[in-house]
Length: 202
Image (cartoon, rainbow, N blue to C red; front, side, top):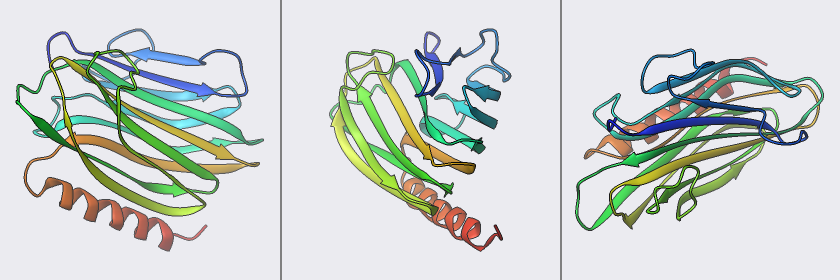
């Protein structure tokens, strides 16, 4: 991760006013070490067993990752999780191919999107890299987009979860500049996660 990079995670029960939880890497409330934000607890009427945002620089692949295991709601509603990292530097001229991929399982519905922002704004929506939606059951999706970026820039991932009643959702969402072959391997892994989730008894 770049020395000045800022990683921020927000968790918002959309039925309440304002953003319920905002966590910055290393600040009070962050349960993980440098480059990782972890939240365990509730947000409005939602319970999050473990939600983690991973910043750039913790692996050999350039990018960020947002994942959550067993997000549940007693009465249903809409929850938004957003991870952003600013001050990212690639040092590569010309268009860059960003790969985005998501996989998981839901008893409700999930919509998702990723953006790169040349203005380097936290939660910036400069250019959309990837977007989609999935209904109940196991799901996986991936895509890539070539975008010309200027250093420094920001990356943002957003996942919206909708439940009607007591339901559960888990997912893993990443946006990366893959090494050769990495995007294909990640896509195969996400398909495997979806298949394994489908086979698990309810």
